[in-house]
Image (tube, rainbow, N blue to C red):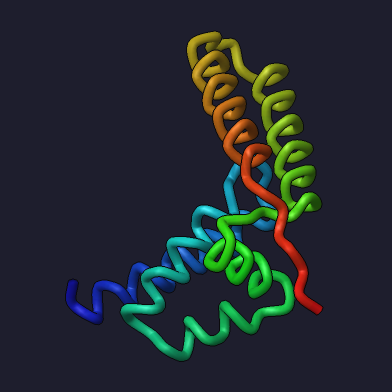
Length: 122
């Protein structure tokens, strides 16, 4: 993959991750993981910034080293997905969309809650 493509995708996924922090229903962590992967191939500076970021850095390190997700992140994802589902429930008449979103959210939560919690090495 050309470096410039990786660089552009790294910044796109970083922007989506940052937007996902404040927009319910838009995932943050998958975009953050993609940003880290593409930045490793396209921008050493962005890659270093992501791993040194006060909120994102530890998430990336835990995932990279242990495939682990913190308990707080799991519960935050659960609350956010439930709020997003409730919003859809009350504001859409499309039952097929609601069913699809329901199945997707259950799969995401199941995946997250089956991941180990990180072991802290202080």
